[in-house]
Image (cartoon, rainbow, N blue to C red; front, side, top):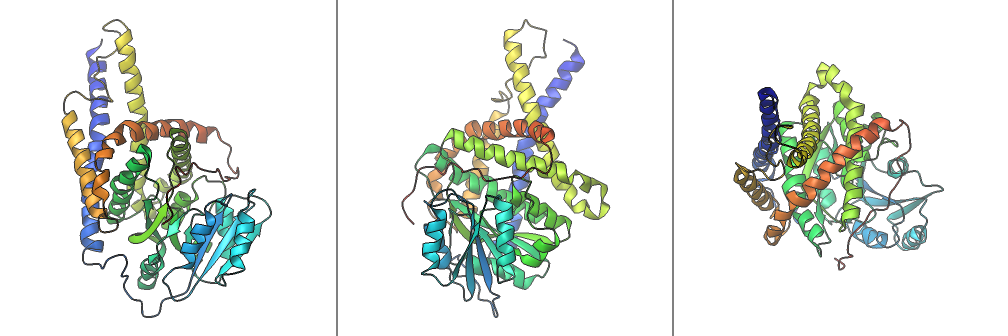
Length: 424
């Protein structure tokens, strides 16, 4: 085998190994800065800062086939500890008993209004319908199976009051279902990956995405950017980029808690991660032209990270294929590679970094949820299961997006919500 090819293969293997290591430390540094600047000294989540003149808010709950969950969701939304609010539930052409449940609850709760769409239009259109019918300027969007914390609105609204350039404030989702291995690992994931990444990205200037399950919006800003795009699978990622490219600010508020259901089967997890990957690919394809606009150079690092992560995913798959082929073919046909999945030398550095990241992130989130330490042990499974699924979803998603015609409506796909937890 040519020495040049062998050297090139070694460099690619080094990139595949060191890139996640570098990003892990970058996230931890960014999260530490966020903690120091924005979280230190704040009261507990159950004691939000008082606002002198809090503006009214509209809570939007788009629903599609949520008969099993929506009543519990609405009970929590209607129990918000906030002086002036309404709840608008949008039934997006559900085929189950969702509409009947909503009508029954609307008859006994004066703060609840129900909108029935004749046909299923997708979450983006359901949110737009709710935004157009809402009475108030501040909109809080939650999913039809999410349980919002009673203090959530107060924590989010303060950002809109303090800064007129804030267009969206995303909250802090917490996992409800924890009875299986996948559920327990996702508890750690939302702290060590999702929460830490949002902290770091805000420290560095821009967010990749708000959480579609809990985000507050300034209606005027959403109107100016054309609302949520109906042809993007992940409307939350898309609207985040639209708002930031238009010059608005997007913030993360870790005290704004919401309890959510997540998949607890491999099939459900794959469908969810593939949907996220396809949506991310659509948004990247749509926004690559940001590199042509100097005034939007603040978005360039985010584009660079997405492109680098995409390259890393494909290279990891390529190296894995070459390594497996090298085990079967005669010596000298392919470069001699170690396993890219189980590195021989320096693997302890990557493993130790993962453990440090998990421990640091659980410490960050310990002020919002007690007992996170018990899930530390389960995070040893994260690289084995979730890395492989996320990488595979990324590799599959981009060819699909390139082959997909534009303008197709993105409609609801009923997710796997795992084992039903006890009522909170």
